[in-house]
Image (tube, rainbow over all chains, first blue to last red):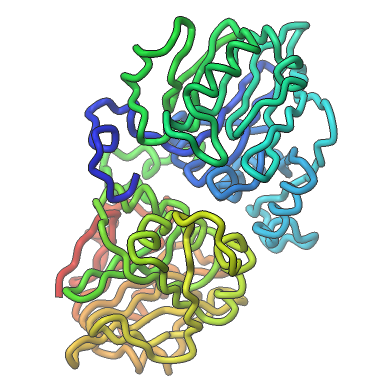
Length: 240
Length: 240
C-alpha cells in the first residue's frame, strides 16, 4: 500500500507486492481477460500478453475497470473488443469510458467496445461461463463459473461479502475455487479468511486459491491454511 | 507498448520503459501531483511518496486521470484532497469518479475530493500556478507555469498539438520547459520533435525536457538533440 511500512509492504518476497486482481484465460481457440483493473497494462507487459479476444467484467469498481482503455491494442488487432458485463456494470463502463462507446470513433487505434450484456450463461470459444451473482456489501458482483468439456474447471469469486447457498450449490465440486479473502479482520464488502474457508467447506473444490488479499496477509500465511488451500500471487499460472 | 517487439519496447535501457506522464512537486510547505494517470499507484510506490496535499489536472484523458482513486491514501491522511482542474476536466472527473464526488461518502477511507475549478492563477503553498491553455487536437489542455519567489521555474506542457504565441510569451525565459514531443512522425494531437524544438526556440528556456514520448523515440535519441535539450525519463528528479 502507498506510504505503508508494514511487514508485508516491506517484505523481500516479491509475491507480497500485489497488483489489482484479475485473471487471463487462454484456450486454444480463445483468450480473454476477467477485469481490466488499473494495473492491466503493467500486467499485460509483464506476462507478454499477445492476444485478448474478449473482456469479461465482474463489477465496475475502480480496481476492476480503470485499465479498460489499455485494451485498445487488442481491439485494434481484432477490429473491436467484445465486452461482457451485467447491465449495471455495462452502464458504468459506458459512463466512465464514454469516448470509447460513442458511435463515431475518430481514431482507428481507439478502443472499440462491442457490448454484450450478461443475463445468463454464455460461451467464449468452447468455454462456457455461468454468472454467479454474489453480494459485495450493498452491491452485487458477478463471479463466474468456467465449464469446459463437461468439467467444472474454475469458479472465480473475486469480490464478495457472502456466498449464498444457491451459488455454492452451483459451483459444488469445482476443480478450482478462486475466492476473495481480504484479511482476518471483518470488512463490510469482502470475505475474511475464516469466511472464505467456510465457503470452501461448502463448495468442496479440489484446490482453493485466495485472491483480492490485503496487506494484512503475507504470502507466508499460506502455511497456516488447510491442505489444498493457497494464497494466489501475481503471475500465478494454473493449467487444466 | 503491449505486444510490441520494437527496439525501444525491448530495450535493455530501463529508461526506455515508460509509464504515463505526470510530475510530482515537493516544496517545504506543500507537495502536489500534476495528473494521476493509470500508473499513479505504481509511481507513488516506486518513489516512496508519503505526502500529497493537492492534485492538479491538465485534462481528462484516461492516461492522465484513471489513477485518481489511488489518492485515497493521501486524502484519508489529510481528511480531503484538493483537486484543481478546468471546468470541463472537473466535470469529467465528477462523471468518471462519481462515487467519490457524491456528497455522502459511506467509507471513511474513500477519496474525498475538494474541487477547485481553475479559472486563472492560483497558489499551492508558496508556488503560483498559471494555467496555460493549449490545443491538444480539437480539445484544450491546461499546461501550467510554476513561479516561486519571483522566478519562472517550470512550464509543463504535457499534451499539446501547438503552442500559441501568447502562451510562448507567457513562459518566455522559463528556467525549465517540459514539453510534449511524441515522436518524429506527425500526430493529430501531439507535437513532433521538430515542433517541440520550434516551441523551445521561441520560449528560450534554460533547459528543455521532452515528455509524453512514444515508443518511436529511444532514450539514446537524446544525443541527436541540441544542447540543453533532454529526453525525460521515469523517476527523473529536478531541483530548483
